[in-house]
Length: 302
Image (tube, rainbow, N blue to C red; front, side):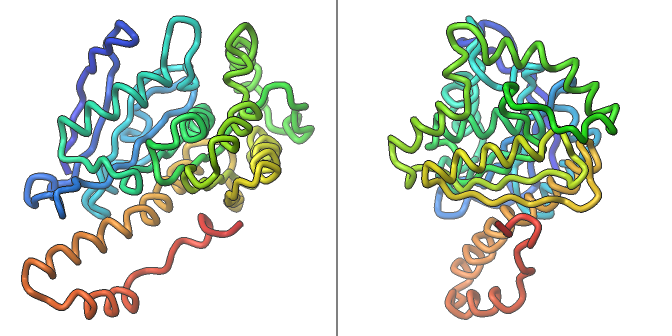
């Protein structure tokens, strides 16, 4: 695994953005299969944190070589990864950061080879990016998201002081995000309606999850899934047993998502190697179907 920390001098934000990455050694040892580059999981952090949470607390680095994935995380603290006033955070991610790194590194530009994983604030940002810029990702994992501040609070929050305090501190940012002239643009309901009008076939696969004891996110996620369902947009939702709104839940979700998304990367790498050695790829497919681990049920159930 190769760890890289660097600053991206953004022309859109007119400021440097810290980016953290973990790259598998196979990026150097092997040429990208079929000239497409390597699969990438783009990571979007929570509030009160930055990109370091994935590598210092959630164990992202260990997943690179295991699943032959590049994991890349920009730091945009308390931004919700949305355009706010002069700060064009969403435009930066989709129009500047991702294309530039795909040009700089041997990363695949194919939509199906790119996925987003967001936690809490980052889940909201990842979902909005998917609805607004569906060409970026083939799959989106939204974990423990908080999406609409106008919804009533879950009454169970009264028994979860830590979660209630998180919401109390973050609420002013959420109100700023959803208020003012750009408020409607940041509403998931508006973005869902616009995405459905462009065509639901263009959208990535949407996978939601949160802890069974995450009272910040449960009702919020159910609300978003209802919006999507009414627009004809399919999604999955999984409750992770006995997990809350915290790093333990997010670490578990990250491991499961990397295993799910990374399984296709491992298959493609094996198929490429077999082709180079003259192996019958149809035999390899049959063997892979028998030997590969099943998809994680906690991320595939609806």
